[in-house]
Image (tube, rainbow, N blue to C red; front, side, top):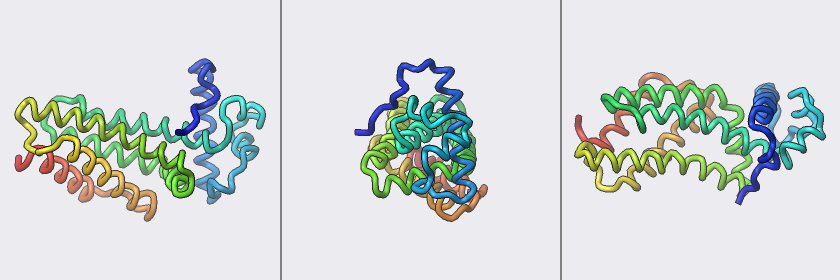
Length: 205
């Protein structure tokens, strides 16, 4: 299991300000071409305008920082996904808005999310962290599908299997295009993803 941040007892507002500075610092350094493996705590702290000692007050190491920062980005992604999970209206329209906003956030935080994938390739705790983040999308999607089935709107046989397949398909698509190839997701790809979601959940509409 991944370790929890050392700063759990630190006031939320202060921690949020420190994390915002560290997020900006880390993305700036990664954007300048540095790999996460080559980034030292001292360099990250200096870029964020805090001391090395202050860094260790909040985080045990830079791996813990990476997990905390990507969890923060994930919360932003979840907020956009909730446009469909909790929204009312035409499913395709809600999904399209959510998908477009999620793709935009992937693009905005591409260097950080790419670093997460790189570290996850050799660190089991970080890999589990990434699995857990996507798991939040799967769980919420499954709940929405179950609600749609109860209302007679969804036609898919299994809410759990459908949610798992759709969420990981979307993650892999965005990862491949935005993080690996640095290609902005265009309208055609957004429309294709939305069509797959709608047909998988609702059938022909």
